[in-house]
Image (cartoon, rainbow, N blue to C red; front, side):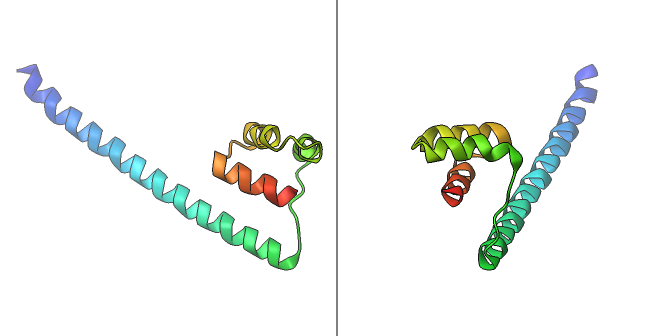
Length: 92
């Protein structure tokens, strides 16, 4: 008899979790779009983002250690590999 109660509850919980995942995914995509647009605006204006934490990344890049710079950028910013590579290339 308990199973008749828990099966619908499990389906409802799964549906709720899935709905939250979809909303988070959509928000991530929207945020990425806004960041790309902001990067284009900064590039158009000839401005660069200066983050004091990125000094180490710039030093690694200047010493020819691009892969280490990308790895350190990811550690500092929690960016994915593609974002980190693009950001480090913009720094160089």
